[in-house]
Length: 394
Ligand SMILES: [Zn+2]
Ligand SMILES: [Zn+2]
Image (cartoon, rainbow, N blue to C red):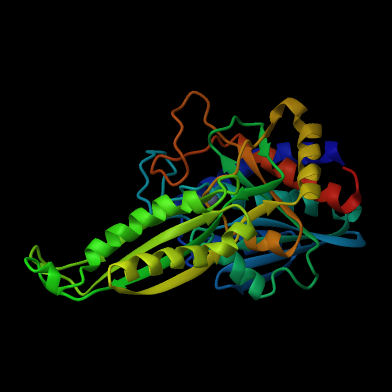
């Protein structure tokens, strides 16, 4: 089937480029993916898939039944764009002012639809089902969770999930992959430090929350690395601080907020208490009080070892072992793909998409762009990995 996948994918190149450019021209931010999801649903329906729409607002699920019964594998694509003003100058640049596909999700949708075309053409040989999960709002880090809550992983129950993300720092024709954690968890905290307001000239009659906040920030940044084993990493950043109205008034309170990133569930679990201990101790020392809120958001994204081996093996078989690169270390950013891989074994690989000879811009940059020659590689990889999982060989 490998040869058939490669032949069918090669025929799709122009269509993949056209589809990706159409999506690129009409980007929509999270939960607004109306045109994008309508297009995805239409393409999947044309192929005779069982299609459900309106899941988690704009999500689409397409189910392809193979010719014989078996397990179900899901292929996930995220559909949302970003509130970024595009500066690529491309002829197919965004027509939606201030919104841009700056993370390559246009390519993800095109590749998932291309995979649906390839696999629909060989459905008789497939043992089991392939479920296409086209989700909204990855950038808001909530789309995946809502898709799961609304049943995207059920009926039939998904046994495993695969996905790819374009990688503009790796060459076209490569896969970068690793087993275990690849993206961090992302949680938020908000601390209000309450003191006693007064005149700036008379701090002895006040409890100065700005002074306490300064100590809290320094204590967080010095205590976390002293208290927690550096071999299980954590990043804490205080990213906002608000308080005060004038140069000579000590305010009543100051509010800080920040983000916490970890690479393990164990480390993630201890962070609320560790942070609150610091806040409690420092504010008490200076005579203030506090309110502490910890907002769990996204879990760690961890690639299942077995699924990683399947995708890695398929890529080596398709493109040669020299084009399959080890991801050296996880990224402390986050992906809401984490929610799926908490439910079932799954893997996300990074598909090489660097534009040869052009300056490389990271994801979310206004000049971000991919080399479209990566698109058929993605289709081949997703198609062959799904078949390998379901049929045992490609
Ligand atoms: Zn992104
Ligand atoms: Zn992305």
